[in-house]
Image 1: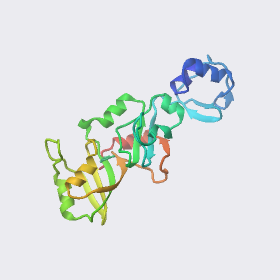
Image 2: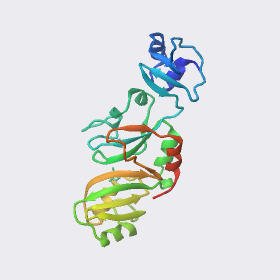
Image 3: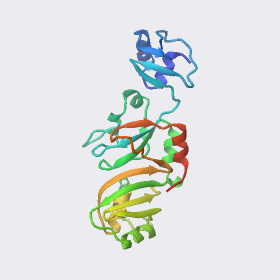
Image 4: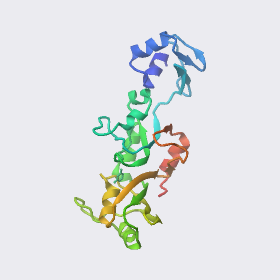
Length: 236
Ligand code: URA
């Protein structure tokens, strides 16, 4: 594939913009400067540099972000900055989107991708992908609340009760809860229906993929093949 097309596919702009970058001597391939926009390379496994930053060619982008509070999962945020502002420009240009949304005050594991099939799979209600949250609540937790969440709580506008797939009291006001649906404010509404109130919500896992403990809030990283395999595991 021509270098110009490779850069375009990776989010470095339109073809004329990519051509200009290459001709200006700002692009290297496998460590050597390449100023020919039409030079041919096999993109699979290709490593290239733009303005000194190294990138690996990826047909699709799969990433995870440790979402901080006070960020919105929207391209047009209303009250806070967008999570997309935490990503480098090429990822935004190539159309990376959040896989489902977290509330602006929710922190933790957020997947992003530009693979429409992947986004569909991980947002489809039919798939019942487990999502694990650490929930800080206002009032001390008790067995009655835990049992109610496991048995299913009735939410307004829902035809049937919704149950947590797993629920573990970890401290007086800290619950680890797994849900398999992706409805609006689901955890907050379930906790309210069980007679408590969410004070803090942190997503710690999706499927078998956990939020890496060493990834600071606001930072992202690529999902590698092993992460994608873990994600597909249904470990609640
Ligand atoms: N449930 C909520 O209430 N909020 C989130 O952000 C995610 C799940």
